Image 1: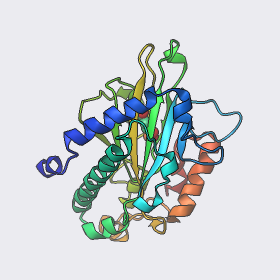
Image 2: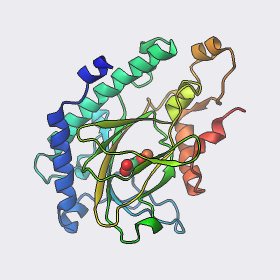
Image 3: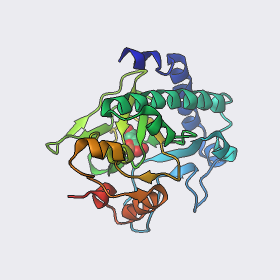
Length: 278
Ligand SMILES: O=C(O)CCC(=O)C(=O)O
Ligand SMILES: [Fe+2]
């Protein structure tokens, strides 16, 4: 654990990115719309992904950006106000990527597999950021900020941009547990890809966001993905060691993501079930 703290994101980097993200959402709508998400795109400022005309919309606005590899950045979607936004996000992105490498190394050691083997799957450290702004809602109990889901990526680092509680995780007994924000802390959650690679040793956590009756809430989720060309499957050396066989089917990452988006259309909570071998 001490190693993790040594490799943590410096507090000043966290405070800068929190300040600049909060400032961006305070801008007039017209200024935010300069970075608007095109109707058929994923990146930019707009509403949470709309998959169908009949979908019930979540109570939120968002800003979605590709951060890494650095060549994937589409700067027209990156806010120019406040002026330090871009440099704050850039620093936070590289510090977060370092934390993720460190965590992947620990996980590999914990599973008894070669760390380099796992890290190689994350070459270029693909990383995207989804900042979500949840306005207050008088009928807070009638809406959801974000519907229940597991993250399809490998690992998410979530930052509470302001200190308003809203994130809930589903416990094994089915009850929802509120996660309290801690200033300067990052919430690490395992996504579907790590669940599969680890043959179920690490589980992706189901979570959702509720909204507050009179306070706005802002969170920034950094999703970390593997390289596009990998095969998503339980690590063969781990399966051999376990002796119990693979618990998930093998699938190319591109196909895995295609399936993820089509499951969203169906309104399914976890598309992971499709890949489980019972
Ligand atoms: O706002 C939150 O706390 C959760 C965000 C989240 O789960 C997501 O964007 O996938
Ligand atoms: Fe999530």
